[in-house]
Image (cartoon, rainbow, N blue to C red):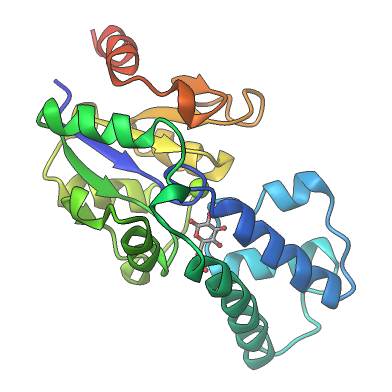
Amino acid sequence: MLKGLIFDLDGVLTDSAKFHLAAWNNLAQELGIKLTSVQLDSLRGISRMDSLNLILKYGKQESKYTETQKEEFAAEKNEKFLEQVETMTPADILPGITALLADAKKAGLTMCIASASKNAPKILSKLGIASQFDQIVNPALLKRGKPDPEIYQKAQQLLQLHNDEVISFEDAAAGVAAIKAAHQFAVGIGDKQILKGADYIVKSTKELKLDQIVAVFKKNNK
Ligand code: BG6
Ligand code: MG
C-alpha cells in the first residue's frame, strides 16, 4: 500500500537544474572544455565533486589539478549557482507540483526530499515549501552519490517505510537508476529515452496527476 512520496529537488520541484547546468558549463568553458549537450545532461543529479570530476574526465584533464584546486573550482561554481538561488521565489515551483503536494497531503502520504544538493534546504525555503516535507536526506552523510541507491534507501528509512510503499520522483537518468536500484517505483520527468528505466514517465511536471500515478503503482504491485 502506498504510504509515502520521495522527491528529487532540482528539476522536479523547481527548475534549478538549469542553473546547475549553466554554472557547470561556464566553469567547463573557463577550463577549456567544450561539453556536448549529452555530456552536460549526464551531470543531472550528480553530486558537486562527482560532477566536476566527470567534466574533467570529459575534457581529458583528470589529473591536471590538485584536490585544493578542484575544491576552488567547485566553490566557484557553487557561488554562481547561489546567485541564481537568491532570485528564487514560490513562483519558481514547477507547474503541477503544488497540486501534487496538496493531493498527497490529502491522501495522508508522508514526504521526503532525496536531493544530492547541499543547497536543498535553502532552495525549499526560497520556494516556501520546506514545511511540507516530513524528512530531508542530508547528502553530506551519504557515502555514495546517485546512481547508487543509498540516497533513496535512506529516504525510505527516514519515512520508516518499505520499498513497495513509496513512489519516487526524478528528472535525471542517474536518479532513476538510483530509485530502481533501491527497488522503488520510479516516476521519471523528462525525455522518455533518457529516463527509460522509470515505471511511469511524463514529459513535464504539468502531467503529474497523483491518482493516475497511483493507478499504475497499484497495478505494478499486484
Ligand atoms: C543535484 C543536482 O540535485 O545536486 C546536481 O541535480 C548537483 O546538478 C547536485 O550537482 C549537488 O548540488 P550542490 O547544490 O550541493 O552543489
Ligand atoms: Mg534532479
